[in-house]
Each structure stands twice: as structure tokens, then as C-alpha cells.
Picture 1 (cartoon, rainbow, N blue to C red):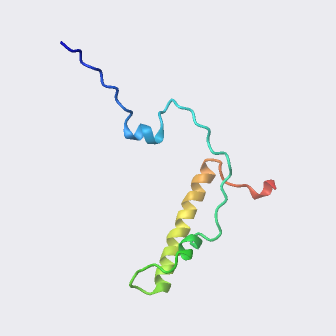
Picture 2 (tube, rainbow, N blue to C red):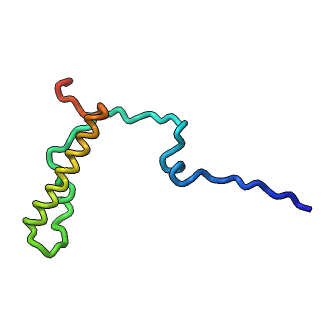
Picture 3 (cartoon, one colour):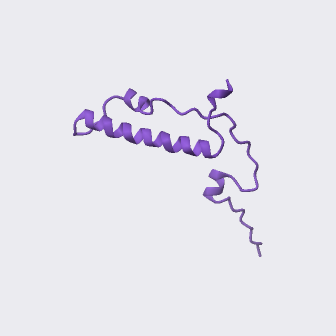
Length: 88
């Protein structure tokens, strides 16, 4: 009679991605500088393929990019990661 093998289970997908809670990781300590031009990368890709006027599209997308930068800046400031220009 053969013995049953115990299966070694892999960690769940979230643990493989995020790591285990007991693992220490070195945080990124570089300060974050908010950009002055949030839409620069998107503009470098050319005009978006939308059927409405390009000026309207650009205005709305710029508003979305600016709001994303505001949210990221607020998160960085709340966690003490915002670049301090007065320290130079």
C-alpha cells in the first residue's frame, strides 16, 4: 500500500504579490516631487482617438491628470514622503 503524499501548497496569489505581513521590506525613502505638467506623457503620445473635439478631450483629460496628481501629492504629504524644497 502506498503512502499519500502531503501536498505543499503555494502561498495565495495576494501573498505572492504583496508579500507576507511578517516580512520586513525597506521602504522607499526618496522624497516625491509633484509634477508641474501632469498631462505631459499623455500629450507625447499624440491625440486621443475620440470622436469629440480635440480641445474638449484635451481639457477633460488634463483635468483628470491634475486631479490624480493632487491625490498622489496628498497621499505623499500624509505619509511624510513629499519633497521639501526649503531643505536645499
